[in-house]
Image (cartoon, rainbow, N blue to C red; front, side, top):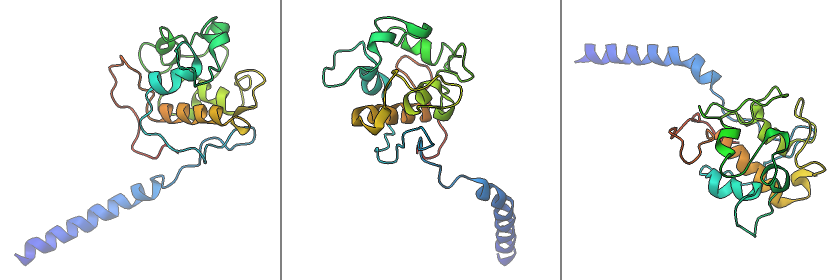
Length: 185
């Protein structure tokens, strides 16, 4: 009996020794979203692990009937389609994440419109969150001061960040989970 315990204990030590480099490489805490020069910090916004795009984000973009929410994108990207970017509810899935769910490429930009799981590589988040993020063309809507002076806009930034970080799942998608098991912010 003692011999079995000794073997089991040695195996556990070997396993622990083999996993130590992995444990040291595991991210303990990520930098907060935004907060870079020219970008809004989301540190004061509550993290939302259950963002439903159609209920939580689409009303801010427009094309829905929720009068308590400012529709920031409706005039240019719902009623019209500036930049070949329609955010109307009927088109938004294809225009943001594409038919394959991997993120729609953005013509003229190095970023995908939405890179599921990675808001810092998503043009949608960068255009909302940063006034001067590299290779994005600046903050949307044009002339916006972002969340620094508009708490509702900052809430939109946080929702978009958390939705993308969680995998950018949309209704009608056959993907049910895509995010990593890490903190959202």
